[in-house]
Length: 318
Image 1 (cartoon, rainbow, N blue to C red):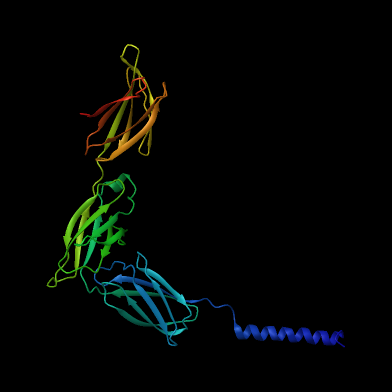
Image 2 (image 1 turned 120 degrees about the vertical axis):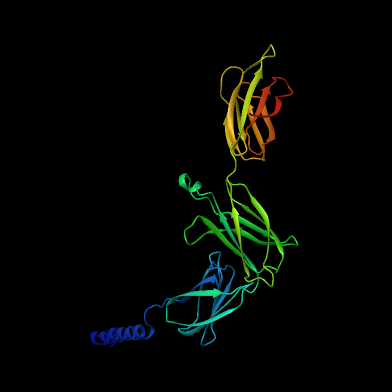
């Protein structure tokens, strides 16, 4: 009887009905419910990093996240659709609690403002405007802020002003009233900018203090390397050398008694160099320290003896 065509048809129909009923009951796959939080400082409008955002549904289920450097985080999990409570906390700010309604599988974009309850600095780091006319915008500067006891209260990069100006901004919250802090701003291709700044006091009209910082390009510094070889008569003859100076490779070239090459360097910086004379193969190694602005000359002479090359002290170029 099991092989009877009528019975087999009934079995196929029954299975089809079961699958249809299960599909209707379960429905299509549902995307997880998410809350995208955007946390900003109430007074400055700048992002608040390291804030904890917790979402609680009407059944007590929760999901949470921590904001990144741009004040953003995503809370996703098992919260149910319907009313939710969004609570936000961060050191240096008062807590926030807000309500919202979220649908099944919905991604809710949720702006949050936190009010500071302690002094904070807003560093405004600018670069010379002419830099942007012929060169790309520099990489984000790095800021380090040190407390009176020597501990680091902030260390990280600064981000471009969202309004599109050539300014990099960062908020340093949760400071001590009336305390003086040290800071250093560094950026590739620019001189470090350091200073001190005092936080607002309890009697100040605002908890926020702006700290403008102007970055200045490194002055052009070059080292001219001269190489020569002492001939049989003791007079210098033409020689060339291949050197690695810091991260730069240099081959001196020229005619007459000396061959020369120029290497760009940062001011007030010590560089090591290694290499060899190209004619004799004698090794070269040493170090030099640049000045604050002007170029320097470094003379290297291959003595041809077992003692190796001799080095003439650095000379300032006019």
